[in-house]
Length: 253
Length: 253
DNA sequence: CGCTGCCTTGATCTTCTTCAAAACGTGTGG
DNA sequence: CCACACGTTTTGAAGAAGATCAAGGCAGCG
Image (cartoon, rainbow over all chains, first blue to last red; front, side, top):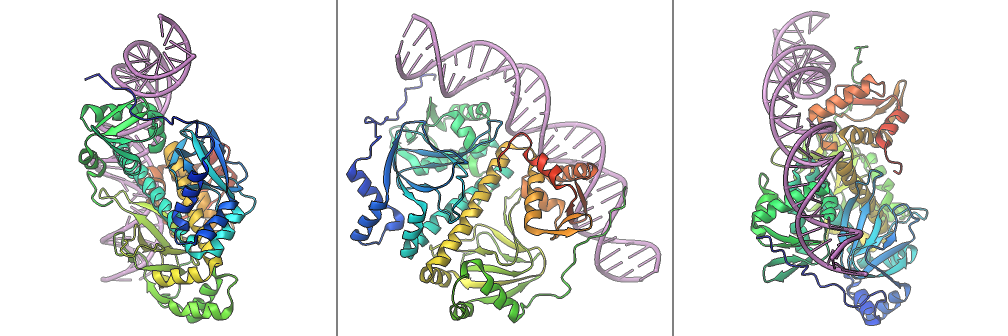
């Protein structure tokens, strides 16, 4: 019962500090908001991007820094956080390759509202925010796609507000595990592995709970056979069971 | 001490169920995202809008209804809410004339994620979502403005997530009162009146608290001379005092 | 092999909810 | 114009969920 195997996560073999050139082209070409543009247009946009690597746990920018660039994750995992002095940080978003973060807004003197931290070795592409806006205003279809993505993030932030207002920690953790599995799930012999390093503290910061409470809930889930988990990793063994917990007592969503 | 005057809110004298024609033109022309368009362009866009009136407490659309239109508030106050079966609803946004709500997204078979309810007699203008997207793709400057607004809402939803995760009800209520005063404040002999009907229940639903807790906090604020309040109305008497409560123990924002 | 950083578990304490009931304001109908 | 009735607000007391404080245990790594 107590045999908890070692981490099933495969850690980056190469220090991906430098994005390879073909990775870079693949990412930019595959960006959802540039879908539909001509190859030469994409090649030109490509020239506005610069690449940069970060080690695990390195900070890409801090909340409060002057907001100058928009970033796209090319490789690795990036988390977006807000802080409080009491150290009760909030983890708002966990980003994977192809997703963007940073500054979109017009206002020139703005600050990043969040801190962006590499969760793994990461490669990001950055573009000056004015240059990005210029691209969007030249290609309205791209602007609408970006609008859709931001709209989705708004919906998901509001859903989190609803959950924090109305549901127990247990339900919120079940919900977050399901969303993470949707986004990062990898089929494994025993269940759906969430393919990113994920500590109890991360989970706590994603659900507005303390490490201790998150740990208690995770232990309970494990005892009930809903999940399998160890140091920095989680795998779902009984998705329907978790869904039942996440949505018991309310139907929609 | 106990003399609490009657509501200082001026209720709509006219049943504004029908928007006047000039109100309508003024609103559409004044919409931030259409700023900069030529008058004839605005006149043409204007033709795509339809107007509709609602009484106080009437529902404009329900969460789960098929999402077909984008709405703009022309007159009155509209609140956006999400529900739970337990009745612990959440009030996500309180909208004033010039602000939009409803469907922006591309997906044709979507549902509204929120319920929109008139808080006062209301006049709204609606436009088919496809028509609105067509306008945005014809006028990229408008698309970028809309993107900025949605971006702001995302920031404010995330700030709420942070507060729900980390702060006491007292702080959250102080914060919400300040934001409402920023948006709806009217200078009065005694302080800043929040110019909309606002019950303890509304406040509770905005802050993830119960009516009783919201009432206790408001009573305490009143005892401390920070606010003045009665049935469905609130006025701020000591803004710095509230700011101190909202931000004590953390500096930024 | 022992160190460091995660993770776990227990006991206590605080905040907020829940349940209950009373007081008050507002608009209504007599 | 007054009084009643309803919905809002207030207050109290008891209970629960989760935070906090405090040890220990375990995994992986040098």
